[in-house]
Length: 296
View 1: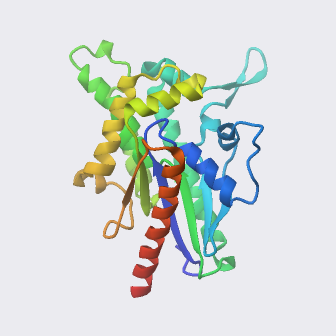
View 2 (view 1 turned 90 degrees about the vertical axis):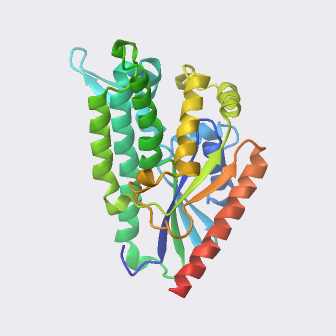
């Protein structure tokens, strides 16, 4: 990292589908951003249309928020040679409707788009280093990461195949070959400096709770999601952020393994309580990091 800039950190907001990540980002943007979200339009839809948003989290903390690139996953352009038309395809919906056909394609594209987000912000900070104030913190707050993608969603698809190994034709997820390709691609990305993460914030939420929230928000791509799927994703998040097996964390490019790598927040509570808990924990973490930096 360019030595001319202030301290640059990346925080990844993690959790199951429907745990409240997008709602938390919307509240942050509305409270600390330069432009408030339009109350006449669904806040989540507005968030999904954003590439990145800058906010002033504190007097000495500038934050760049990047929501999940859902608009890329649901609006992939392609040309129809026969009709000579440009069309768009919804890869996210294809994956949920037919995971046997689309899981590999979707997860590969997920890793690519997440890496592009990380790389873009990293390069922006590098290129603008001389113009940034050394006394300020510069934070990239990212919705999920290549790590939860690999050890959560990709792993779930691979587990599904292994459970059906005696009759692989019953499997609707990733084959061993597809899994190995995605794993090698992940290894290639995780070794790059652009994929460094300093803190994971895990919104720990029960599968039954997120299921109710998913039904309430009623997004068409999420109609096929079952409680079984949510339960498996929850178990894998618990393994990654609560159990933290050494073999897994040796493959996570994290700079703060000797300090604090994960903040766990109870996402089952009311949103206002979760949000205030997030703000409080982030400020405490920065105080700790700032103290550690000064001591060095």
